[in-house]
Length: 129
Image (cartoon, rainbow, N blue to C red; front, side, top):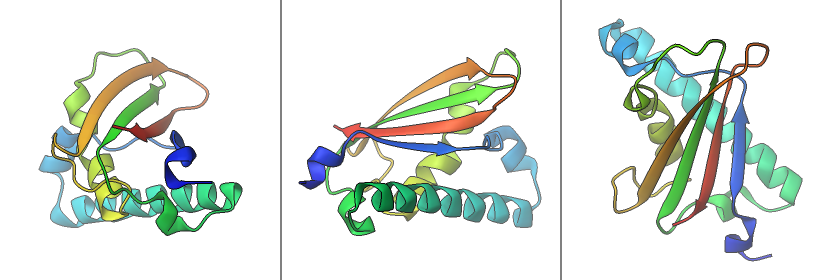
């Protein structure tokens, strides 16, 4: 199986990121913990995919532009700003090598909000760019 045949990759994380508005007003240690926590969650989800597909983790790492779809499943249908939830996740994808960079030359991002009262979560879909 070639690296490109592995895509799309779907990472499901059973929590939602802190909004950028909350993150920017939080104490520096809270911001640091949130970034580290999401980097670990993304890494663990990617490693699980690698194990399931019987490939090495480096085979999942990016070398070209990717399309990223971030789907957030909230408990309610309150209005939210899409840009408010991307930063921590995109940084985690870059930190783990799943994206080269979160700049537009390397990453095309789409954000979708859903409601799931019983199972709030974040789904990250990586596809070839």
